[in-house]
Image (cartoon, rainbow, N blue to C red; front, side):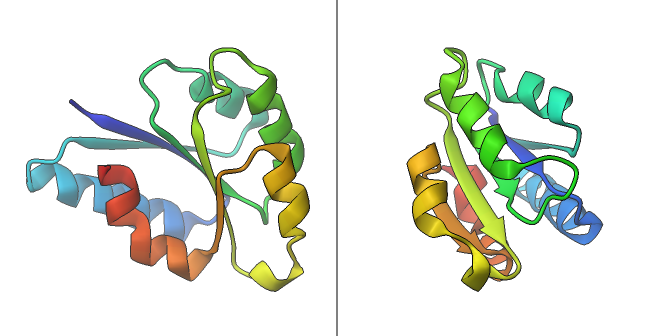
Amino acid sequence: MTKKALLITEDKALQQFAEITALTLTKLNCQTEINTCIELERALKLSSEENLDLILLDLDLKIFSPLQFILEIRQSDSSKDKKIIAFSENISWINKKEIFDSGCDSIMSGQELKSALNNLIQF
């Protein structure tokens, strides 16, 4: 069974890193797929897909409000139970309580995300 993740970030280097990680896991016989996007409407559509396992959300987005996105996800019947992991390059400025209260499952730094990405999309 293919594990699917949605990565929402403007960081091109992170997008490439995630795509290479997914390809590597697939070659190691762990079927994974990562979709990347930065447009709000597309992100909302992809997040409601039935077979999506994980949403990785960049809190540093400038195109739309990540907090508002989380709230919208949690209000949708098709995506309210999806796991959401938020990340930021500068985690110290994040109001973690506000993010958790909106429905986020975990918050980490961008570096922590890169270190844990294999495990996050594999399980």
